Image 1 (tube, rainbow, N blue to C red):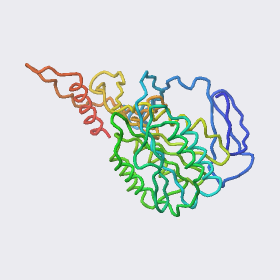
Image 2: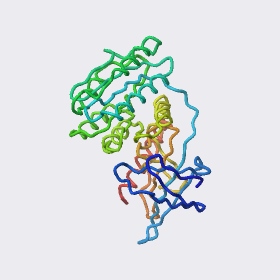
Image 3: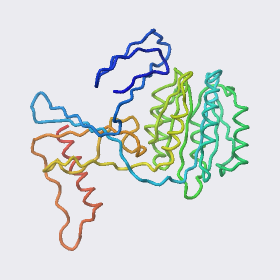
Image 4: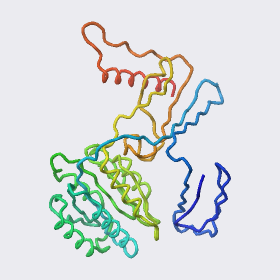
Length: 333
């Protein structure tokens, strides 16, 4: 551990090798307590293995790694969905506007974009997403300058439905950025909508202020295979926002599997459980924590590969091994 610091509270930290003790200098519990830890080698993979205390035959492994892939950015349509309800008044709407300006200034030249404001009603800046040009950029900046927290309550389902109903430019992937400070009464319905539309459309979320709903903000990112970030009052947001934009331009990883290098039936490469908030299908450059369950008990053998004239393809083999691993895991869950 190199440093421990907080941008939300005053703290003292005592660091000893791989351990650190953090002490709050004042019990200011009116907002989330966020502290950051920097370590000497953050990208080195690590694995922790725990053995079941009851039978000594079962083990759980947690592998933490940062994947490194050379992937080209994808052509992306960006739709910014901004909460302008009454609760966003004051510093929150100012923060949302600053965030939106930064995002607009950071868009690539080939991007398409749109801005949707929502509250009790919603309003789209353009009828359909437009190409990012000097003219549309200036038009968007002028609209952002005029934004206020004057849209009443918080209703996010209808604006999201409207965004999904819009056509996506040919050859482009769509990424939705949602910035909000509150919670809604129909969160599960909202998340189900996002889940149904994924992976064709990914969702990235930004919680603004101390009262942002983690269930909504984290849930949007998880269901939409994006990432979630939070901005507290007075916190620097540039790094978080720009990183989300970079994530949106990277292709998502789908059907992630891990070969744990074991012999026998447990060696079947299968889908992994993830301890990361965004799940194993998220942006490839993000740190992942993957969980694997192993046992020495006898497991069913995978179904044999096709014989005769048919030759098993790599994809058929992968699917066969996945099914075998799922059956194995279900039996000893």
